[in-house]
Length: 227
Image (cartoon, rainbow, N blue to C red; front, side, top):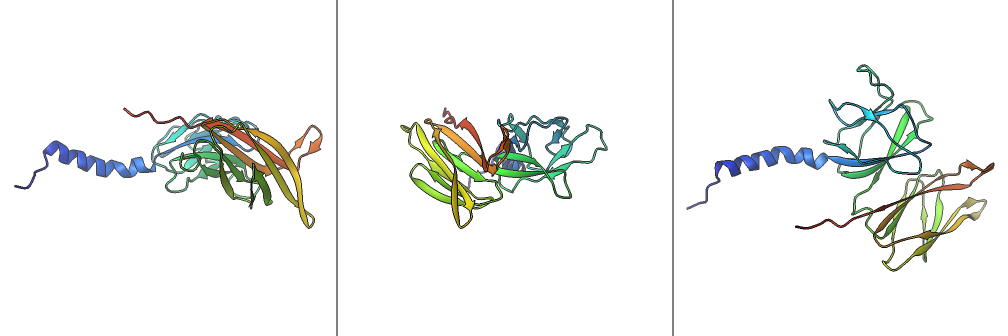
């Protein structure tokens, strides 16, 4: 005799089939400001979602935001119902954990642009340093004993062992017919840490112009507890 599905189990299968596409598109993300800490901005994470104040800074990630269905985000400067968005930010398909780098847009169009970085444990595992080149030029990098050249928009992940305490980070930029080293600094590391370093064009600091700016962020990928 063929087994028969009970009614509750059949209903469970139907609900799972209906709800899975929505949950598969859900997105958890944190925001990083490209410049300073913008004020008076609000974020709406989906149709019918009330805007919430945006908390973002240049050197620390925001609390986790949740977009339940992966819909485009709307950035607003007013809570008025008729307010036009400053920007509409669409996450790439399939992204489930992300960091949104929010930057003013000097070109015509939206007032802000967003760069989405994959923040999943697969993309940024524990015991790793991830470098994203968001500068306008290629950067030659040395991380420990390994080397790479990252073009604008490229990224690379370097792993480190549980016993290492620091890795030397070196960076060079094109200058004339060769490369000029502009960064040489030890990067502290610790077992379990996920380190994100964003490379960007130099900023003016202490009366001088840096050739290259590095934004370094730390977090920790805690193991998932099993029952």
